[in-house]
Image 1 (cartoon, rainbow, N blue to C red):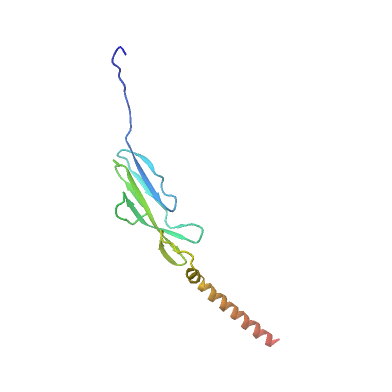
Image 2: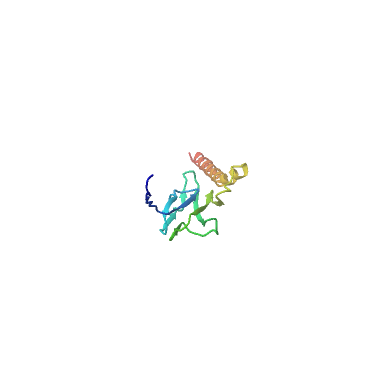
Length: 138
């Protein structure tokens, strides 16, 4: 090089917001321009098609305290952040934290099926009485 050179660099500061959720389709994680706003949200309840209902119990920002709600807006972002949504599940009329869904042990199966077994027994008894009643009349 025979003389001084000048280089010009242009950049934009951005911060990454991580959105974690075990259910629903949350707002996607994204790079956010410095001092901009970003809203993360989920839709609750969610039904997964296998008889489970998932309800969002809230979120934590950067591992802090659990706050109720399904949406949070980061305002004037000047650092990276993480938001994690938490859920509970309803299975067979009972609520369970998302990490402790019941296993189908024999006692759980019996508990879930007991009302249906009673209903089947009552229906069979009514049917038998009906047949007996009309057999005598004819």
